[in-house]
Amino acid sequence: MEMTSGSVTAPTAKDLATARQRFEANEPRDLFYRAATELVDLALARKTSLSVAEALAVLLQTWNASFYRYRRFDSQHFADIDALLTRHAGTLRDLRAKTIRSATQTDLGLVLAVFGDFEMTLGPVGAAKCLHLLAPRLFPLWDRAIAAAYGLALGRAGTNAVRYRRFLEIARRQCHRLGETSLPGSNLLKALDEYNYCRFTKRWI
Image (cartoon, rainbow, N blue to C red; front, side, top):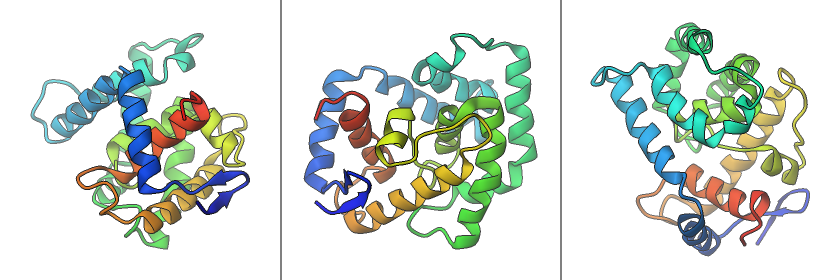
């Protein structure tokens, strides 16, 4: 395996397959990721009574519950998320069709502004989760343990956009090395997150 950042090594297709097995065996919350992904698709297509903010909440309340331990998830919070979605609607619509491998430098430049704005409302981990659901083949997922493992330890809210851009560039290089055929039918960014989560967050591999 090849070095990518600090002590982190670039995973192989075999590493991703091993992580997938461990993840499926040990992490029942993957159900909420799949549910949230489908709900966001339906909400964006206006094929459900749920708003996009409500669809995003399915993942936020399960995969990012610690963020809300001392914060209220109420109507005002939904309104704040709706405001973010409205403010960045055009950009998010364009980015949803992009992939991390095909995105241009102009596309990646938009990440800084969008992530920075989302982070102020959702924190750096919640921002990545929401943006991933909105553009699942462009925005990688992370948490504090994963960011630290890549030499990008998170700071206070509002200071992490540049770190996230660097993390995205690392994930981009990993995806180029792996190639789309490494895990047929899978989203490489989700597979990389499963690997990172199993290795750095949970130490299952």
